[in-house]
Each structure stands twice: as structure tokens, then as C-alpha cells.
Length: 205
Figure 1 (tube, rainbow, N blue to C red):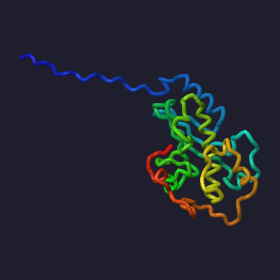
Figure 2: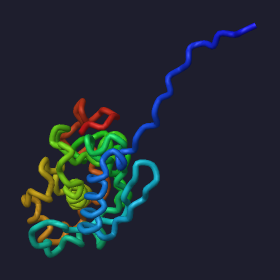
Figure 3: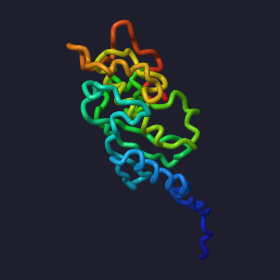
Figure 4: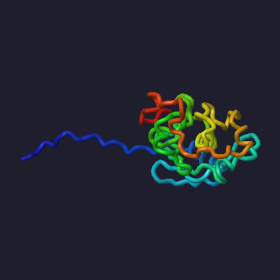
């Protein structure tokens, strides 16, 4: 007796990793990132990632005299992980040291998304996929400085443009931190409450 075979499921091709689909972008990142940040190391596992410590002040203006009194001697230690939809979407940048407190994840003024990654773009359309990822890493370095200012309680929220481009917070860093400043989490300063956007657990940027 002959058995009629049933319908065959179509064989789905294996997904193509981003670095195979975008070899020129992969080569560009492999050149640009070490050239700008020599302390970052690449890990090819999964979609690929970079991990290490950023410099404290990689900006095109003189470093303020008392910067390290606010931040300590080292810049942000981070993990930057690619998604397979890169470069159409930006990589995720996860701060490792300093590590934001959980309560700070739900308040957008700290520029931390609900998943603990940094919110470095004011809107999704600011990432076109053509800009250098080094620009995001520079913003991450700026986040570390503004985070110190937030923890010392001298600013109520981080700047929209980031200290990488906006020098209005530089004057704080030209002097030592105020004596007796509260270095703890400023998650609920007087007169402020998280708004609906801040209360969401999903990434807001």
C-alpha cells in the first residue's frame, strides 16, 4: 500500500547576522571604535558587543579643573551590544559602573530606559543608521558626567543635548563639589514626581 506524503513545511533560511549583511558597516565600526576608544574590547559572540571603560572627557573643549572630584578617576564602564537589526536600529548601551539604581530606570530625567540601558537619543528618528556609533559612545561618556552631577544633587535632570554638546553644566565642574552634598540617589527631589512617561517600564527612547 502506497502512502501519500503530507504537505511539506517550507524550509526557512537561517537568519543572516547583521555583520554578514552589512560587511562595510562592520569594517567601519571595527576601525572607528578602537581608534576613538582604545580601552574597548570586541566580543564576537551573538550579534557582537564592545565592553570596557570610556575616557572621562572625550569632548572638544578643555577638561574642567575639578572633574575628577565629581566623577572619580575613571570614566563609564559599559557594554555596548549590537542587535541583528543594526544599523537600522542603534545598539544597546548598558552602564556597568556606575550602575544606576533600579528606581532611576523609571525616571526619564536620568536618561536610563526601563531595561537599564542608556537613553541617548531624544527621539528614534535621530538615529538614521548612517552616523558613527562613536557618536553614541561619546554621549555615553557625557552621561557619566551628568550622572555624577545628578547624584550630587546640583542639577534636577540631565540635559536634552548632553554635556558632550552643551557646556552649560561645565561651570559646576570647575570647582569641587559642595561640602556635605548628598551623594545618594536623587530619585524624588522636592517638588518633582515621575510623570506617566517616567513610570513606564519599557524603554522610553
